[in-house]
Length: 563
Image (cartoon, rainbow, N blue to C red; front, top):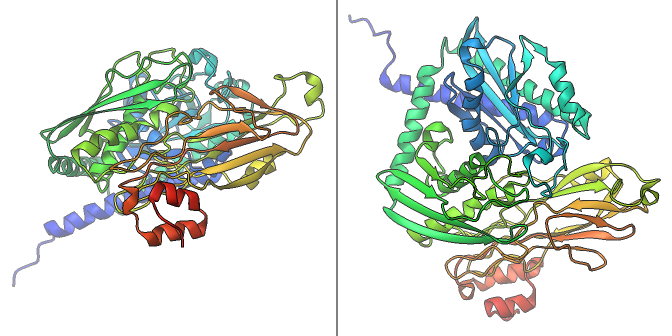
């Protein structure tokens, strides 16, 4: 009788590899959840403005957490390798942790810290964990686009060691905290980043022990090879050619135009932003790392959404930019509000893809989220006006609508492409004397179409104190250039910002809301998809019943007479 082979069959080996791959994703998701649950800043713990991932010892991103944003995840994909230039893996020791918030070598602005932690079995480095989150304050002009250089925007921390062999570098920490208006929150967030990476490291070591692994290199090679293969196969299903699209944005001192050229050839895609507007003198520019993150996300969201996001699948997309433009600013260009441009890039890419794939690409969305950076007016008005007022600085988030999609309406008040959530009004109200008078859908804000654009919202904020407060409009856009419709759909509603008393807030500056007045922001809506006259009457009636569309708009936009 023949003895059975002790070697697993190819099928069993493949199953085992897939189980390990899924386990790795679970590990980084737990890493992200650790950060989400321990972070001090509301934009991280409530809105999920973070990312987490695992890398091999060559600095290649193998897996990312589902929780997080493309801007953080895709910038981290390349950010980790920059640490190795100063700190080779051979020099790293157990317990070491490295940090930076360099906009050009990290995630695009000073508010995001990247934390990197090597993982060891004995004295051998076997993997790298990295995470990032947005902290509330880094000094400088704060969350404002007013600065004319990155030196004015806050404190830049180059690639340094924050923990050495398990001991926190308190000298470095003290420098960071001394340059923040919110040192307690910032320290809490930095320690949460460290803790998240440590959580990921523990879970990875548990996994390696369970599967009797001494290295993850073979698993990493398999993941990256299969991911790149799947992405290239998806690209080969597309028509080859070249398409161009131009998209105007409000800009700051002047309008900005994004010029995109998409080339599909031999299983590879190149997106070229040459010819886009020069860098602004204000802080709305998108560093190349951030430009790459969102333009590639836009491509992948349409072409290969089923393929895991890692350096293997990302390698199928090339980016071309011109140094000195708004999508590739050179140091020390200001970049604090970089998502004003960066989060619009997916729509610019979609404009090209819609020509290559007619009828299959959604309409434009609100794009850039509106960060509501709210502060007391101390130092901006005569001292007598704030003498008895509370000093505070808080953040909330305004979300517009997503563009109508082939066969589906756009999602209302949903961040795309960033994917962040919102911050509950109760949380913000508990931190300061402000209160939200209203936060509700804005009827008729979604562009008309066979598939309606997603609705935006109106938010009104006032103070419980008899004192002024300020709003930084750094990230407000689509006030002059609405999200465009697709395939005959109409544009979404433009955004608008004003005082409750009626005065419009014209630019991206810092505005004072006088005592007794209120701030009113109307977010931009998503564009419509398809001819509005083809929209089913039952869908229009449902919108009318829900108050999402008014009878007047039903008549004028859809040619429909309400029952």
